[in-house]
Image 1 (cartoon, rainbow, N blue to C red):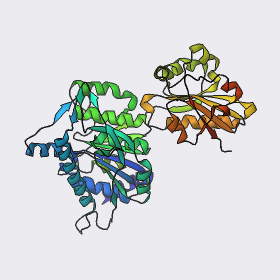
Image 2 (image 1 turned 180 degrees about the horizontal axis):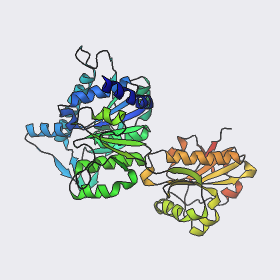
Image 3 (image 1 turned 120 degrees about the horizontal axis):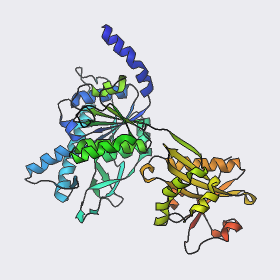
Image 4 (image 1 turned 135 degrees about the horizontal axis):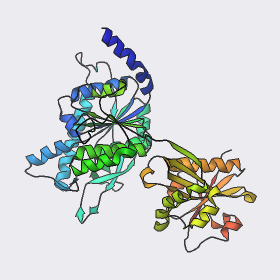
Length: 437
C-alpha cells in the first residue's frame, strides 16, 4: 500500500503537466499484433481519461506481408521502401481496414472486467491526410507508395477539442481521388509537427534507442542524432534509424520532446510519462532558439541560408557587400549558432508602408512554423516604425502569403521608388497586407 501511495503521489506533477496536452502516438503493425497490445490500449485510455489529447497513427507492415504470403506473392522494395503495385495496394487496403476496425473495437470495450469500463470513448478518423505519389526514384516507379503532402490540422484539432481520439491509418488520398500507401512514421512525424504537439511517442521492438554496445540511450538531442544514424545505417538497423530520424525531424519541426519506448514492455508508456527516469529514450530539441535582429557577424550565415533559394530563382540575388550594407534590415531565427530563418524590412515611411523581402527558412525547419515566427517579427518592427501596411514581391510563394492575409495588388500600387526598380523580366506578383494596430 505504501509503495502504491508513493507512486501515485510522485505521478501527480506529471498528471497536471500532461492535462490538455497533445500527444501523437505511433503504433507500428508489430505492436498491434503483439500480446501486450491490450495493455497498451488500456494505458492510452488512461492518458485520455487524464485529459491528454491523443492522435494515434498506426502501421500495418506485417499484416500486409501476411496477406501477400497468402496470395503467394511478395513485396518488392527499393531503398527499404515498399513498391506498392495494384495487387499490393489491395492487400494494404484490406490490412488497414481490418486493423482500424480492431483498434476501434478495443477502444470501445466497456465490460466489467476491462479497465475501460465507463470510459465511453469516441474515436474518429477520415480523410485527414492528403498524399502525393513518391514517384520514380533511380528509375524505379513506386506506383501507389506515397508521401504526406498535408495534414488536416484544423480538422484534427476540432476533433480533439470534442474529446475525441483521432485515428490516422497509413493511407493518404490525393485531390485526384487516388489512394496511397504511406509510412506511419511519416504520418506521425508530420502530424506532430503540424499540430505542434507537445510529445511524439514512438513504439519499437527494443527498449528504446541502443548505442553501439547495445546499451539503452536515455536521452539524446536532435543535434546529436547524426553519428547514431550513421551507425544504425551501417549495421542495417532499419527500425532504429527510422525512429531516430522521425524523432529528430519532429524536434527540428518544433516538437519539444519525442519518446521511443518498447511495445513489448507492460506499462512502458505510463513509466515513460509519469516517472522521473522513464524507461525508454527521450529525444529533445536540446539547444536554445531565439528570434533577434541580425548583426554584421551574421552575414556568412545569411548567405548560406539564402543562396540555394537564389539559385532556384525563388529569391533575388544579393551580393555579400549588399547584405553587409543592409544587415540592419534583417531579422533572424537562430538555433545553436545556425541561422534557420530570416527576413528583411525596407521601410517607405512617406507611404507608411514597408517591403517584406528575402523571407527564407532552412529546409530542415520548414514545417515548424518558423516562417510565421519571422513574419510576426517583421510585422512588429513595421508597426513600431509607424507603418500601416507591408507589401511583398514573389514569384513562387503567393499562396503562403495569401494564407496570411496578403492580398494581390497591381504594380501601380507600389511606392514610386520601388516601382521604378521593378523587374518586368522576373514578373513578380505584388501582395499587400494591412497591419492590425
